Image 1 (cartoon, helix red, strand yellow):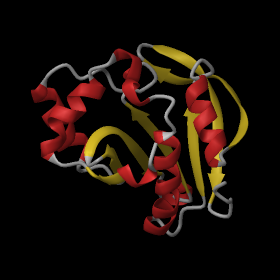
Image 2 (cartoon, helix red, strand yellow):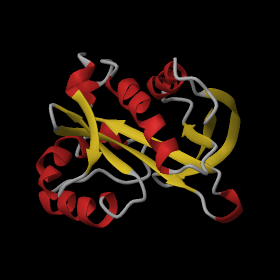
Image 3 (cartoon, helix red, strand yellow):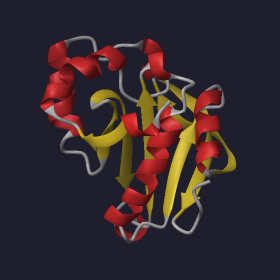
Length: 171
């Protein structure tokens, strides 16, 4: 994949049709905390009420069309030195290195936008091998296995925790 075709930008209301394509796929949303989006109205509402007001949620774009997202949510107070990163991309784009490129693009921007941030964390379910590979390619370190840690789709699930520090190098 030509990296010049990949970009990150804030979501726009006009992304609703594109978002509906990838966010309506159960394969894409199976590891996300939010449910599959099934209508254009729900896609518009998601963009307006979740994506746009979010502290740092960017659309992963291929030729300026939304094909996924990266989200970073900083903690607050005495925990504001860390943030959780999450991402997804349409299943038609899996295995092409797009998410790897997008996260490599996002990391320096996030640390610039949040200068007090020292640590990015990612939680990944053990079954989500593709996401684990993405994080490792980007330079995240697997720190541990958290038993029955995250609640998703009605059940408490095991998670691996990964981190990337502001002093780490992007390979």
